[in-house]
Image (tube, helix red, strand yellow):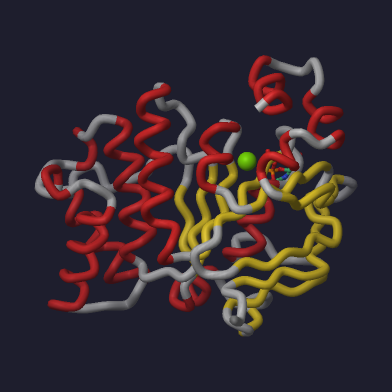
Length: 247
Ligand SMILES: Nc1ncnc2c1ncn2[C@@H]1O[C@H](COP(=O)(O)OP(=O)(O)O)[C@@H](O)[C@H]1O
Ligand SMILES: [Mg+2]
């Protein structure tokens, strides 16, 4: 089966800072690639390069075989790339449903009944049906995280990019969000950047370790977490990192 995403030879520098150094991997529908690495490793930059917010110096990013490098961000959204951020940024004065509708309209380019259907489906799939009519700005954090995913889904993606979406949640909330990502996974190709080991392990098929823009490793979760590379990067740094190395 043709992969949804194929990244090869991806390179990017900001002056002397290398954020991508020949990164390559591929991902099929129904797969989740977890991404870890220290702060500044180039994780969010990878998403910037895939979404077109940043321009690659070299390399290729193909979605279903189609080259994305050189296309502007809105064109990539139309082709099926969606991103959810750590800090939800809904239109606070619109309802949850209206936020999803905006994503279906501007992201997927849908109108009328089709846009309404896509928005309702996204709200339903993210467990927000009961909150659909509430103002987004009034939703508690976990529901705003769900809405962030709903907006991504409403834009009709094949590739779902999640950048530390579990950040700031309590432990039970992390579990709830992890369950949601696991439920969504079969329909998309998912890349999940996260610092929470058990969350990544629960959902990822493979974990990729980035360091100074280089891919050090891509392996099944248990193997990646137990690897020398991960232990060396995280050893003695922080409690989080300790957890990563042990997990
Ligand atoms: N637009 C930019 N201009 C200059 N430096 C940048 C830019 N974007 C990211 N960087 C730098 O690149 C490095 C990697 O950043 P980032 O990809 O956000 O790391 P992380 O792995 O923590 O997500 C950091 O040192 C960051 O300061
Ligand atoms: Mg980041």
